[in-house]
Image (tube, helix red, strand yellow):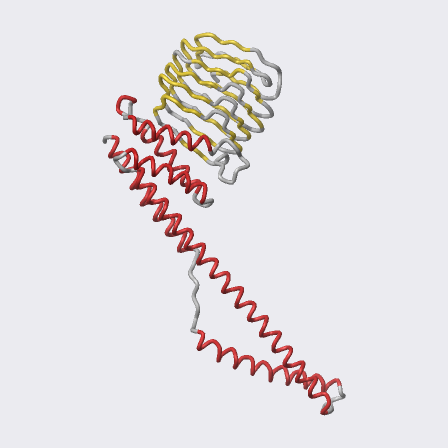
Length: 359
């Protein structure tokens, strides 16, 4: 299947699937249902008020009689009883009216929410269809539309982020020679959109807690300098990185995971200078294969229970630079683990660690 067909299939399938999911969610919100018209409701309410008035009048008259020693109450008491009956009837009527108005407001808000969700779902479908377009200008418009929609739509932010990541992953399997300048620009803007939404966790539109899956792709340049992850999982499992660079300089990972398990690095610079790992953060290079590559971990801060881990890795003719400001490097060579190249390290002791092990 060629690139255009892959994009078309990707966009249409995603659009149809999400349209169905969103339709079910929207219908679950419910619709306002009113039993009858106003011309039936008013006479019924008036009848209820009259009945309620006489019931209260009878109860108050009986209570007054009991308090008077089971005698007929004085005629001077009758105006008071009537006044109290009218007041109670009005109070109960006002209470019921408030309940009805509150219910009506809830139904109106629900209907408004339903309409908003429908608008968002329609915007999503249109953006996904643009991503499947043959022309790169249309795909770029679809990408921008999805990114803006993710900012506006709290409930659908994860779906928008997943769609952008899926597009990047699906279209990355083509070789550089097969990707024209138009698609290269779409890919560049996609990475820029992702990175910009991972910089500040205080922003309402931040993706710092999302699950972003780029697994299985073939990448040259990945630019995520300065991102901030808090509880997020970013996966680059089983990817191929060739003749390029991975930029994660100055990134802060707090209780999050950056997972390169099973990936292959060929002539690639992996730059993690100044990365901070906090809490239970993980950067995983398990079962990776590297050749003619540079792993730059200088200036890292590995704190708390965090870990930078190479397990069952095969690193050939590569360089690993560790200059960890806070943390420790544990190197445990084993037959299942090979590091062939230059390994330099200067660290300070801490609870965090760099773990190189074949077990």
